[in-house]
Length: 151
Image (tube, rainbow, N blue to C red; front, side, top):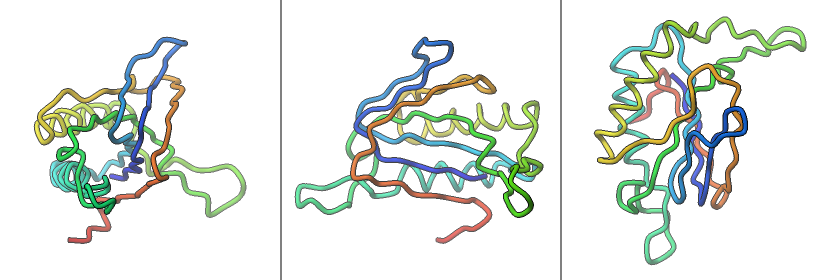
């Protein structure tokens, strides 16, 4: 499981020109899922993302988590995070899970994240053609991969 998180002042996602998820200050999470992902991957990433200290404290140091600043989270499923570009110019998505495997994992990930931060998570629509807009704060962008754990 792979996640790219961006600290944002605003983010939203539209499907067919209609806003389906929107946040102010918080984290935009782009989430990629592969077949080998399980509850351990979900637990690892939801814990890392909900506790990573990338928001500024009163001294201007990145020392606070999204929970500490009462921030919001918008989670977008993105199979292209598992693109392989080793051969040729057309990416291969063979490592990305098919929708029928990935969607239940995505739903579970979002529910567990809601429990960890104690509030409703904003989401895109799984498998839809989505347009994501954001104002990256910093910019701060971090990549997590549950198969490359650093504790």
